Image (tube, rainbow, N blue to C red):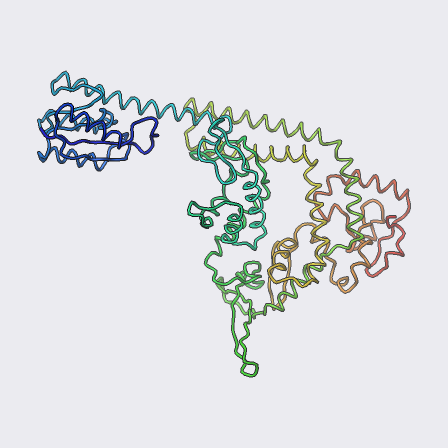
Length: 561
């Protein structure tokens, strides 16, 4: 009788769990020699038998049906089948007589009703082992998610610890990942630039080449770096170390969306994507033209910006890039902050920071109460899902929404514990940005640097009749002087702007140039009451004259000493 030797190894199984294919072949050869069995060929396969569809196994059955062999020899019955369909095919071939015998070195089989019954039990045991193993693995994965450990391969910057079964940090690589997030958030780096940067720190592919741009995109969009684990469409809170803030992550996501909208762009124009047409509302695009000058034997490239006119007909003319750049510089310079004023604000900010410590404990208690309420919501959602009241998709959606709220509150709570109230640091950054405006506008910076800083101070830019109109962000809008004052030196009236505080000067004489710190940044209003009481005590009832534009600060009665 001729036999076909079938050797299989599942790719999901480790070598220590089952004999390798080469070991199976050696064992079957010794067994055939000992039992005087004729093996016509060895068929090898590396595929799981949990589900039907094995090509080599189907080839074995076809040869049996064609009469090329009458028996099958394998190391164990579970090498032939771990599912009911493949096991049923084997037993059916035995019933029809096309398959006359099965041989296993590890078990006994006879082609009798009793033998087929025992073979069916062996196939059932193999299927039970796979199903039970799957349930045990799933239970282990769920337990990992409960304790905040990601049950898969750790992303770049982290490493799986085989001893503790947890996620450990690779300090150097994780710092490189954070720096990559910061560089990409600036808006002037491409995916290739980030890949080259990470390559210097050992973050590369197996062939030692830089990471593919799709891998860079996945890294920048991976919520794992802000403490959120996504598994099977659900969000879980991770316990691994996080060094990337949610604000930085959101900035990166906005840059990803911006690049997706402009991924077909062939040229890198500095101000493209920033402006809209003031007449029709369409996007302002750019184009490049080259001109050859015979006299100097050189080619010069000119860049022009114009309306795309995709919404409706528009009569707006084009504008050259140098002219547009000068208007951007002027717009940035209009919100520059004097050094004297910045020093005063920083001094007041330090005083408010000391007073703000008093309210930190109250804020922490309030946020912790909100966290407990969200945890109660999650428990109710889980109870409803387990009781069958809530469907699976609805449960996942609602859970993710509550989890996002919980993560936001948790991050705010950690920030308060580390740095105090959330308004102090943003306002300090605002002062630093406003102080840099004059330097950025006047220095020999490139168009790309001007455009990047323009996005910092402005939210919307419109171009009408070759004139740039800017909608400044909150805070910078109040720093912008009115048109009559733009010709005056900023140092001449910067101090006079900072004395305008409601309740000190005569309300009837409050001019357009008067600005309080509450108006200049919304975060500063949180400590306004305390600050105003302090200012009132400092002025001790002295009248404060609100200056007119152009009045020198030395003539003011109410300036700070």
